[in-house]
Length: 503
Image 1 (cartoon, rainbow, N blue to C red):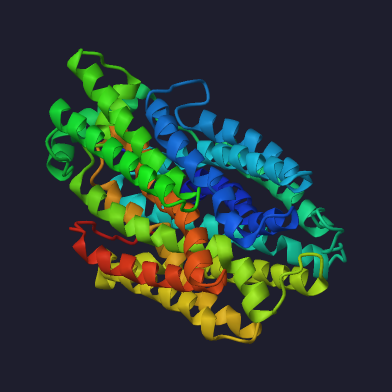
Image 2 (tube, helix red, strand yellow):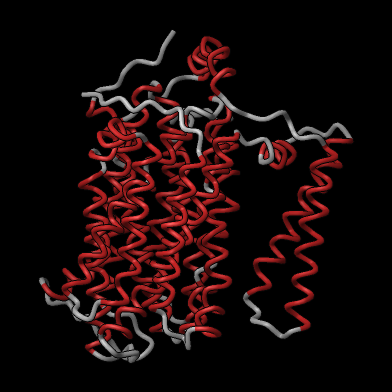
């Protein structure tokens, strides 16, 4: 028994929900810093306010993956999570631009990002569930296309409302402009409708069918899945003690030297993770087998390919988060020469950032189906290396540009990198994951998307303030260097992925 090959339009329908998901992410990425600054946040405070997004992903995605692997309802296995996440995300998109205070905006960001994660993670596993291995590259490319397309429209909405429909893009101090508000309203509606389309237009294999596929492919998966021997409770305990001790020591040094309070988040988080490993090891010794012990143990049993890709993801997403946090501030200050959030110059510049984000997302959508063709010729690793280097050079070059129109050129490189980040790592990873834990490991893989974001949110504000006189343009340079380094790390991945182009 084999999974049937799906038609182009069937893959289109199963990926269509990503259009709405990316509406939400695009509006969040392009406008959250603007909302925070409008509500009174200082430049060095903005990264820590963003911490809600990666922390929610770190917690939510593996848990959702674990439970979605074990779920079956009348709506199926993954689709209930699509729907619940869409409803909550749409509500948060309506609330976010109407936040009366900075802390309400930060709290709404937490809810919104957590809800988006509830929808997004099962979509990745959806490809592994429904597509035969030879079609997965096309499936991830299709998701990249919808991510880019959704982000194009989502990013450009404030600019369109202001410059095409005449909606005001300025407002009194502490008030979000109407152009941003209406963009979020449209985004909330689009999110819900696109996910409903996927829920209505797709079906999932039953548990019996999935079990039959797994039994038939069990031997093959055993050979192809490069998982290392299961971690012992002793190793898990020692790792937990080490992490807790390192986190506690560095937290003490931060306190003793009166360093930025934001640094506590990273290292207290390290203590927390260490404690969780210690608890899991003791529960395993006591022969307690539950969801918590499985999640905390399988985290250490990642396939070798996944571990190497983790480093690539870390530096790629550190760069992206640097860009998302600081592009608005870098462009308004470095290119337009203003920090006055009530001025027309500032808001015109912020709208131009929306255009720039539209450009890189448009490029990502345009090259989504080109990358697999290039990868077929030169290999997945080389394709990802070249794409990340293009993005890194683009971010660094912003420092040397003085004209707003010329800022479009760096976004071309960023768009190529973004398209590759959304597809090539997943193509390399998919063949290394056991089918029975596809959702869980796709959720764990998200750790290496959100941990770098936590690191960026924790240390970037401190670095920019202490070493670069609070000039946000240097955050983009740091991000560019990080992205190039991620490209070089791709060469360490033992890639066995075959890229086949399907009609």
